[in-house]
Length: 49
Image 1 (cartoon, rainbow, N blue to C red):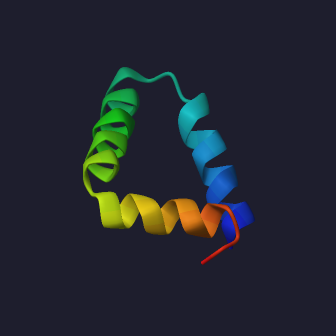
Image 2 (cartoon, rainbow, N blue to C red):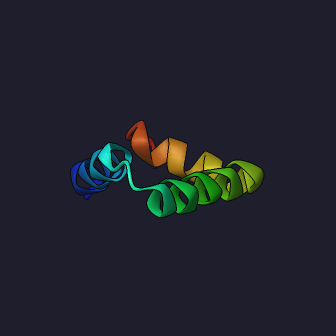
Image 3 (cartoon, rainbow, N blue to C red):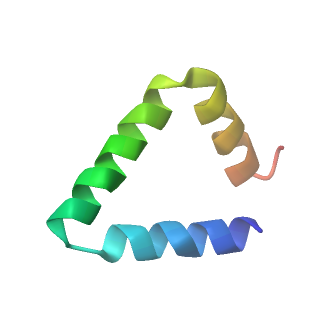
């Protein structure tokens, strides 16, 4: 599941379309501001969750 998520992130960050970049950046800012969600995502990415 994590490999699929990482592949999705790779594909998302490859895109250069301005609307998609705006949405991507807005989503990343929102996650950055939600500390519990951010920490859970980081733990899963490190294989600890």
